Length: 200
Image (cartoon, rainbow, N blue to C red; front, side, top):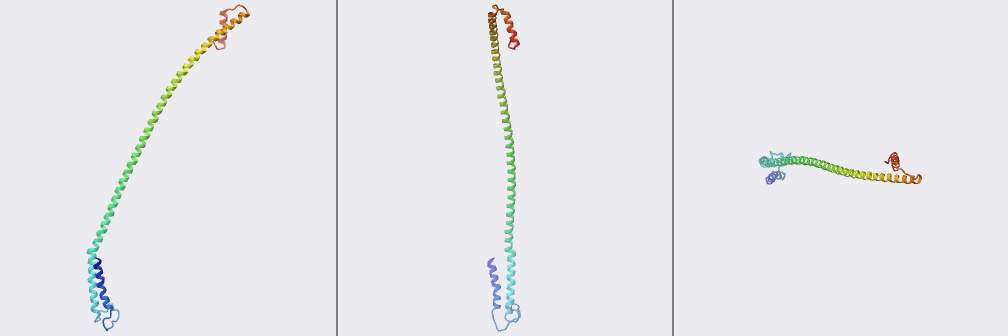
């Protein structure tokens, strides 16, 4: 293609060079490139125009049936490749969107599962804590009841000892003061006094 264009350009410039060169003694009036009636340059100008028309026709033929179809094929191939790339990019984007949606769904499901497991664990821990607290309360209540029983027993024993001490002391004092003591009267008096003081 380039060689044909170069040869055509050289062929077109040769007649111009022949016209520009002085070939005879007959002067050329006006513009030399339009002197068709000149006896020497006229035939050269006609030949030049004929060759230019031939070369132009050849260039038009080459461009219409050789160069332009190839350029059109290249453009169509490029357009097809661009469309294919766009379709592939759209498909990749669709696939990426689907993967992102699936990832979000999996993440939400994992979070929901984790929340449910945490809630279950907290309920189990609360139930275990309540059971341990109930067992501890029962044990403490049993210990408190046992301690109260021991305290009641100790108080009962102490009150019995207090009655005995009070009775013996009263008898001893009355024996020294009066010389004679009524055991039943002393017991009754000690009982009344303890009852009055809330220690019976």
